[in-house]
Image (cartoon, rainbow, N blue to C red):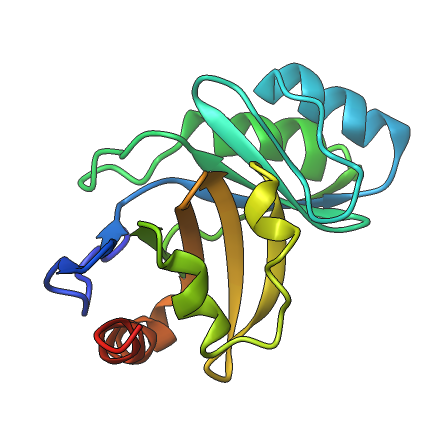
Length: 187
């Protein structure tokens, strides 16, 4: 059983900005290059994997993020049962990708914490600790970027206008959450 005890114990709301952890949600990392890999994954998740840098694709239940030319993260769009970490999708992907030596499937559900940031000051907060230029990103719903935020590797997904999901390694989540709260009080 995965341990869903989070160090983030509260939601924060500031003027025109809210910060909260969303979880638990399923997160699966997949890697592959072969044509059969793309065909099998597409049939299983009912999404064509995005092949353009910094993009995403989604369906009613799942979203996939492009992370590199041969790597994607697939997340559930809904919160999962925290008492059950046996995912049918992971099993099907493993049997049809890893076992057939078409690529790799790794469950990263407990590896990453997802923090949702909402409000008109989201990009002001991110820009205060990130070298990435958000000018084009903030206008592109579905955009994804891997970058550094306050010296921490993060994945940022532009879910809706002024609504992003930020993925950070669990071991850095409390530190980043504390930094965001401190910075949000000043933006």
